[in-house]
Image (cartoon, rainbow, N blue to C red):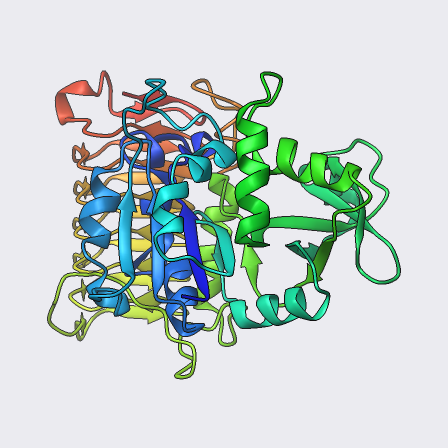
Amino acid sequence: MNTVALILAGGQGTRLGILTEDIAKPAVPFGGKYRIIDFTLSNCVNSGIYTVGVLTQYRPHVLINHIGIGRPWDLDRKDGGLTILPPFLGRKESDWYSGTANAVYQNIRYVDQYNPRYVLVLSGDHIYSMDYNELLDYHISKRAQGTVACMEVPINEASRFGIMVTDADGRIVEFQEKPKEPKSNLASLGIYVFNWPFLRDVLIEDEEDPKSTHDFGRDIITKLVSENDVKLYAFRFDGYWKDVGTLESYWESNLELTHPLPPLNLYDPNWRFYTHSEEMQPAYIGSKASVVDSLVSEGAEIYGTVENAVLFQGVFVEEGAVVRNSIIMTHARIERGAQIEDTIVCERAVIGEDVKIGIGEDAPSKLDPKVYTGRITVVGFDTVVPAGVSIGKNAVIGNGVRPENFASLTVEPGGFVL
């Protein structure tokens, strides 16, 4: 077995607010029918990598049910295939992964059974399209011990990333973790390839270091860069990659899919993205409906107006309802006369008759201004918004909210109902 892929899928994704209150970030729905982890899994099989371990931790139930035995990705194999790797009680009773490096360390025996030459360490919570063979070929050509996939970002945004400083040959000579004054604009994508015997020794050494936080970026990469005899290289990636770690970036990257030529091509027959989704009837657009610049998935029924929106499977938009600049997730229902703008409506939510969402001026969030930072209103999973309610911009209606939880028919901009 030449290469084993390990997908780190235990992240909480706190900056997505109520979207990740009950599910892990890699399980968050995306793009009309997918979940975020589908893109990393699809990249693996499209790259011919069929031995994949998925390391789970935070609220993994939806994620595990979605992945199953890997059949939609052709990963239900006798040799290799897909394996779910949750934390387990060890000899030191360190049952939780204490960092990304520790997560891989705890699964050394899983990797060892395949005796691979290379290990890919991947993040399960980014949206991207990458042929890992190009990364592996670069790694081999440089005779590297480790290679970090990187992307050039605007210099004014570099302080949000881990930044790699390289020499003329691409060898990493310095690593800066979210620097205030970046020396480069080459940002790490959290995608690594290592020679397995080399990484195995590094992980064991890191685990024994009481000062380490056992994180790949903060500890492993920093340590390797400081050692002159280690060959660590930066692979420059120029394809599509997006960290949908905030509500604004999540909303924007979904709505990008409505463009005639979206940055992420979901329709490339040579690089398909696979998912485990419900089998549903074709979408239906009623005779009086209007649908403009929108992505509509199977099972959706539209009798109202939809503009610049992403509608997931089984969404129902009644006559007289208007949906603009919004994301409506699976089996949500928008009832007659409702008007929705700049909103994320989560799975199985019901928006009652004549409800208005995203109206008025923007205002700072009264719930959490660090998470809810823009004009986007969020309506949670399994929530019912009663008829006639008006909800302002940047408001939050939590998961599982019922009509009796609304103290009045008005939720002001920046307000919330939990």
